[in-house]
Length: 318
Ligand code: NAP
Image (cartoon, helix red, strand yellow):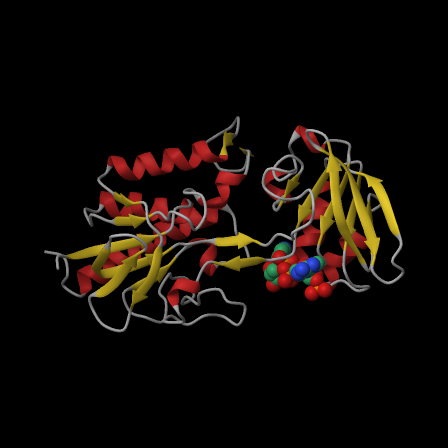
């Protein structure tokens, strides 16, 4: 079987940036962009206006940004395979990448850039086809500035650093921000928690959960249950934001690279090298801290440069 230089797995800013760099370095990269594992383009496909990606002073629609990156990678010769990767064999060189349909590829190096999913709860009204992306989202930083949320009562679900950070961020736009937390104590660090606790526009609904989201075209109300007292209350709402953590997309790896205790891929500091030589990780699958499109793109660039250096040092390139 013909052995390839580099397979990139994923389809977000990290994967496409890695592909742009690798293709321009004549590594002839192959990108498994997924099929059922989520939208091609990653999390930016489910957001609307992206206002913080440098180079777009008037903002850019998330799916358009990803289409541009994909086209840019294609222009330099990247081959795209629209299949999920279902398994890898990283135990011997060349590595084997098994696609979900017809592709099985052998390659000297791999970049894993499969991203992470924002976790959602299965609340009535929150699902796809209901109010998902019509007032319900899983990223306040990405979506919070949308006109839809201006001067409305907004609800953030969660009690960790993300929830309090997103609630404080939303105070710039919303009228009042409620944090709906299932316990009577925040998980967030004290310094972050204090910012929310001391903010005049933020109120925490302790021991509470949203049991239903109601509206017409967009979100208009939420039904909240206090799980200690069982009291049920309806509140006017302009938006609901899940901030209950992320899950990196690593199941297909079958633990063949070392992971951090929180499930993210472990990389060497200031590098994209994983515990397996020749296998690199970029973007949200190895980043539980920054998780931004621009940091994902930056680490995609790093991974392509690391892979090129590895291929050269090992004598895989002519
Ligand atoms: P997290 O720390 O795992 O917190 C998730 C929160 O969601 C918890 O409060 C949890 O409740 C709640 N939750 C989880 N599942 C739930 C469910 N089924 N129903 C209701 N609530 C649920 O996640 P995170 O806040 O995204 O933070 C992830 C990591 O990133 C952390 O290490 C955090 O420190 C870091 N981070 C740092 C910053 C910063 O420093 N600027 C900002 C954001 C995130 P319980 O508390 O009851 O478990």
